[in-house]
Image 1 (tube, rainbow, N blue to C red):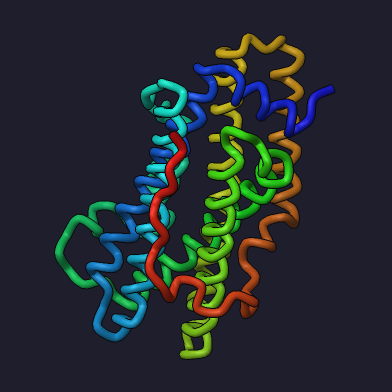
Image 2 (cartoon, rainbow, N blue to C red):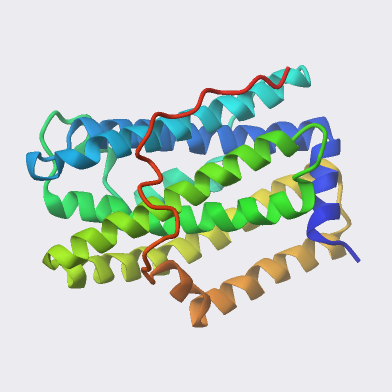
Length: 262
């Protein structure tokens, strides 16, 4: 039998699978950094108070991308191309989740509805990121090579999730509650499908790199589909609830610098 810990250990121990893992992570974080930077620049005047927090969010994502790049360099590796079917952020955008990149490339102020769409998208995707990092921190928080990075990124993702809860609740109290819930539900239902498809694609690539037996690959695929089944029935609800976080104003300060991993 294999566990999440043994599976990730296999990926970390092999240069080719580790290279793919870090490349996928770095690409997604860099994309998130760009998106947040553009959203901060285009924030409508009625919500300008959010711009510094969105900027901080983007700076954190950029930092995470640099961390994964540093982990590659430490092992003497260079990034590899991310397979299209494993590009989570690109696939979300193609499904119309979040704000379209065409909109973000224009120098036109966003609307309040655009900002709600962005925050609802972030609420869902940051839940996914925070859950993943909690799992990795539990199994690899003390790992000599990746533990420091995992602990730092996990802390940031928890801050991002808290920020989304806080700001969406603020907007709900201002009268946008129904719009927020509609956006959250639409985004969560689409995200669980994309996450399933991306997970299957990543495991397929990892299986070929690591030469997993067909039985192991089939068992992993079955587990991914079973998780999707659970999320489709009930698990998606954790992504749409809103509660005031214990961490208040979690993005109220400057971003921390990228640590050295070399």
